[in-house]
Length: 524
Image 1 (cartoon, rainbow, N blue to C red):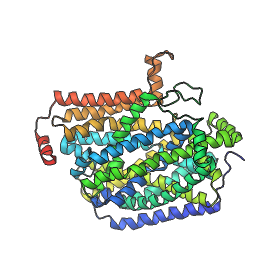
Image 2 (tube, rainbow, N blue to C red; image 1 turned 120 degrees about the horizontal axis):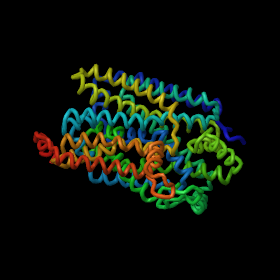
Image 3 (tube, rainbow, N blue to C red; image 1 turned 180 degrees about the vertical axis):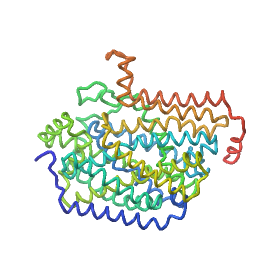
Image 4 (cartoon, one colour; image 1 turned 90 degrees about the vertical axis):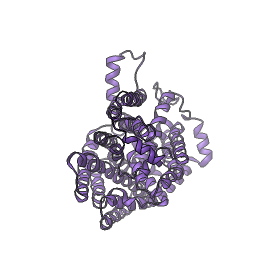
């Protein structure tokens, strides 16, 4: 059995093609129901709890989520489940208390930066919008490659050109129906993708558990794998500091909790639901599907670990040689594994489900970032724009962002685990947004100057990328046996700097007008 051997056949290609064709028809149909900007960006704010839950889960259970969770399961086994525990805890706390999301929905804004202007000033809105788009598009820059790596692995296409062609075709398809239908098409396709994903996830999980020997097999594997994320050193590798560790746990707990509240694609669902009460319930009811989105792909990664290390050690050697040669990365472990254990026919359904996961994330994120460009950057600077012009700017922004994503996906090589890249680039936005939004909602003395400093300070977050870490250590901490900065340290530092700058900036440079008092009177 070869490393790229697969059960994927022409029948499976037919299943995937049929699903893609259905998505195109939905885009054409949904365009009939876009009556204005509110329809295009937040589906008229008419989402009830069931549909909001389905579309939110469909968005957040993207193929990039499946890929990074499976990669963590493959490299860190059971220790990778800490992400699921942290996220579910954050969702439960927010769902029970309504922290931030309840008040934010009360503001009845279309985007988060629109709230910045209402609470602070127009300049805060523009700067906040720019930071959100920069961080979001950088974060999204690897989604396309991650999805293409899945398709290349599961279909057995080992030609390098195949990756580029698949990336281009997938992006063009998503651009097509997102540009046409806006949030209406996103909600409808996310509902369909939620259903397809549910079926595909159950199929994959059943085959993985069967291959591993069900519960007894899982128990046996846990005895010889990395299980405690508090350990900084992975016991299965010879590399120092190759595990998670307490500092990384702290950094990712803070970042994940903030992302659950304030990540723009998630907040777009909060702003689109029918009422603040529905927004709070949405988070509480999301605990179970969000637990599944983190833990089940990690299980698939653990299955790939067992398959390549124990069941098929010969293939495991081929895999490690290919990784060492730079031909593939650990991201490819899970799709290569599924291609061998799932039979033809079912493999096509699973692949269609993963394509659905890919599309559900891309359409929502593209609409989110482009909506911010139109609403919060172009309109405040060059407006006021008519609703028709705003929709046009949003559509053009979708196309421009899509072009950048294709370029970045082809050019940028992720030199660390995919999740690490995502959480680091996400910090660029989250570090400033946390104090600015929370402070704006709950602190009377929050000021525009403090907000501007905090938002700009988020740029410090890029120092968590490997290239910056290497440069910092080489210049400031050259002793490899002494203190060395790491990505988690820079993430915590960015969060701390932005919050501190916001507090002191607000105290030293208070707003001259007392307009913020009115906001508190309305929400209290």
